[in-house]
Length: 105
Image (cartoon, rainbow, N blue to C red; front, side):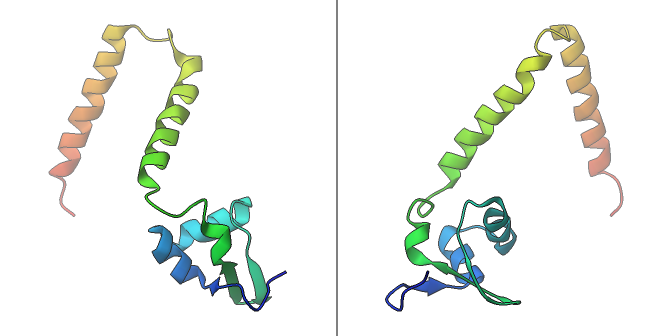
């Protein structure tokens, strides 16, 4: 329960403070990573105290977490392709990428 002494922030203020988008804040609320209080159908507030673990430069933590996730996600596929096959696939992806750059908008 929110107390009168608590500093309450809007979703936009929280997003600006954490340097993420409002959509990320809504996603974190839905995932349970951020507790929020609903005052009406259109009004959410977040306590400043709940942001302490998330404040600061999140980019380092996110990139580290992202790299671990990729390693974990790719582990089951290790050994499916040979190095030459992987190079061929990578070459095809890069060629398609270069072709798409010259496509008209």
